[in-house]
Length: 104
Image (cartoon, rainbow, N blue to C red; front, side, top):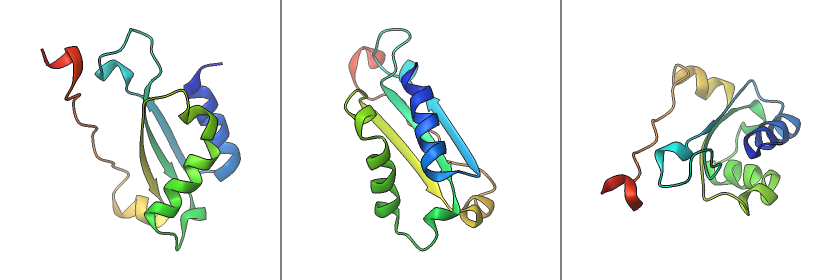
């Protein structure tokens, strides 16, 4: 099973999200084709209500403890349903890779 699918399954089971989007952004970095090393996760659940951002990220990191040993980067966008609505369902675009062969 792919790392992306494992991430999706674990986060779905742990948080029962209203919105879950897991994007493999490895192609944006200096890695071999087909790599699973860089991910962006948008996770919307009311389980995050009244929790600071750091607490939300720690909860996600705990659920993905094993996967974090295998990947290089995990960008997290964690919101409640109300926060998601306020942002009109939009999250920031990931920046272009600033290192490695992609910039040469």
